[in-house]
Amino acid sequence: MNQKQMFINGQWLSAESGQTRTIINPFNQQVIAEVAEGNEKDTQYAIDAARQAFDKGDWRHTPALERGKLVSKIAELIERDKQELAELETLDTGKTLTESIADMEDIAEVFRYYGGLADKDGGEVIESPIPDSRSKVVREPVGVCGQITPWNYPLLQAAWKIAPALAAGNTLIIKPSEITPLTTIKVTELIEEAGVPAGVANLILGSGAKTGQMLAESHLVDLISFTGGIETGRKVMTAASSNFKKIALELGGKNPNIVFDDAEFDTAVDQAMNAIFFHSGQVCSAGARLLVQETIHDEFVAALVERTKQIKLGNGFEDTTQSGPLISEEHREKVENYVTIGINEGAELEIGGKRPKGADLQQGFFFEPTIFTNCHTSMRIVQEETFGPILTIERFETEEQAIQLANDSKYGLAGAVWTKDIRKAERVSSELRMGTVWINDFHPYFAQAPWGGYKSSGIGRELGKLGLEEYTEVKHVFENTNPQPLQWF
Ligand code: NAP
Image 1 (cartoon, rainbow, N blue to C red):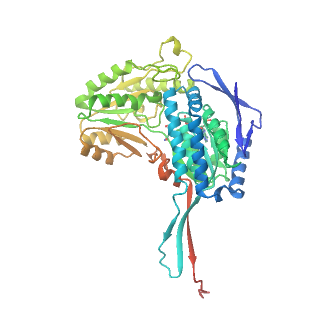
Image 2 (image 1 turned 45 degrees about the vertical axis):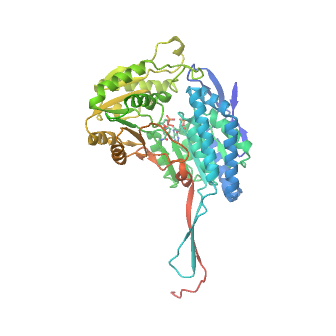
Image 3 (image 1 turned 120 degrees about the vertical axis):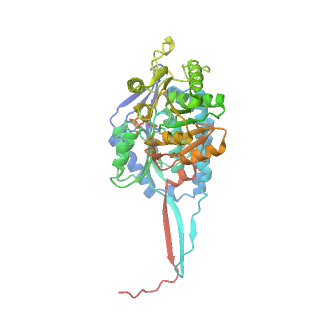
C-alpha cells in the first residue's frame, strides 16, 4: 500500500490528528493509496512555514536566474519520471495513459517555460516628469500563495500554479483535490529533490472545506489561486476578502463549438467528438455545446451519433481504451441527473444517457457518451456545466444568431468556430466573449499563451507571461537625486 504524507517546512509529515484517507481507482474502486488527512492545524503549520520562509528566508532574494534554474531542474525531473507520474495520474483519475503521458509532457514544458522566464523582466525605467529624480517600476513576489486545484487535471493545474509562483520568488502551499492527490505528492518529492529550500513549497492534504477554506481565509496568505467549480470559487472569493488578498480564479465553462455549413465536414465532426468526449467531458474547456448551422444539422448529428456508438470505454491502461470512467460515484450521479433534467426540459436524447452494460465496466464509474438535440439556451442542460460526456446540440441559421447563442451564457472560458471563410471566422471570434477562441480547432493550449475566462469563468490568467505576472506585485520606486526642503510648513 502506498502511504503518503504532507510536506511542510521541508519535512514529510503525517496529519497532526493521525487521520488518513484512502484513495481509490475510479476504474475499479480498488484502494491505491492511503494519504494523510490534514486539518486546520496542519494548514496553519504550513501557512506559518511558508510565511517564515518568505519573510525570513533567502528565497525571494535569490537571483531570478538561480530560481529559474531550479524551476527548470524540476522540469527535467518530471521528464525523467514521466512514466511513473503518468501511471499515477491514470490510476487516480481513470484517464487513459496516453492522455496522462501527454499531460506530463505539457507539465514539464510549463516548468521549463517559467524556468526560462524567471529572469526576463528586469523592470522598467520611467521618464520622470520631476527634475532631479529617477523613477523605475519593479516586479516583486506577492508573498505567501495558497493554491487549490481540482481533480480533473490534478498535476497540470498544480503545475500552472507552482511553476510561476516559484519562478517569481514566492513561497506556496498547494492543496490538491482530496480525491486526486497522488501526482501532486510525487511532484513535491521532485521539488524537494531539485533543492528548493525548506518552507518554500509546502503540500497540504485534506478536505477543501477545512484546508482550502483556511488558505483562502488566512491573513498570513497574500494570494489565493483557485481552480475549481463556480460555487466553491464564490466561497474562496468571499473568504479572500477578509484581508483583500490577491485572487486568481479559474472556474468552469460551458463552451460553444460553432460549426458553419462551409466547414470541412469530416474534420469538424471528428473534432466535435474530441471537444466533448475527451476525458469523458471532465474538462473545463470541453466543447459541451455544439451549435450547428441549420443546413447541415441533420447530416452532422447523424455522423456524430454513428461515431459515438463506436467509442470504446474501459481501463485507461489498455491501448484500445478511448475514454475512462468518471471520477466518482457522486459525480456520476450528478451527470446522470442532468440527463433527467434534459429529458424533462424537452431535449431529445439521441444516444447514451445511461450507465454502460459491459461486465468489465461495472466496478468503475462509467457513463455512456450522450448526445441531446433540440436544445435551447433556455435549458439548464445548455447553461450549466454537467462536467460529463453530455453534448447538447443547438441549431442556428445566421452568423449573428450563432454569435448571439454562443454568448448567451454566464460562462466565458473558451469556444471554437469552424468555417473555411477566414473573414467570417475572424468576425465571429472577435465577437465571442471568451478567454480563448479556437478557429478550425478545439482544445489546444500551451505554456506560452494565457489561459482564463471572461464573465463567471474566472478572474486573472494562468500560463504565458501573464501567468507569471499574477504572482508579482508592481512597485514604483521614485528617487529624488537632489532633495531640498519644501518650506511649506
Ligand atoms: P471543486 O469542487 O470546486 O473543488 C476544487 C478544489 O477546491 C478542490 O481542491 C476542493 O477540495 C477545494 N475546495 C472545496 N471546498 C473548498 C472551500 N470551501 N474552500 C477552498 N477550497 C475548497 O471543483 P472540482 O469538482 O474539483 O473540479 C471541477 C471544476 O473545476 C469544474 O467546474 C471545472 O470547470 C473547474 N476547472 C476549471 C479549470 C479552468 O482552467 N478554468 C480547469 C480545471 C477545472 P476537495 O476536493 O478536497 O473538496
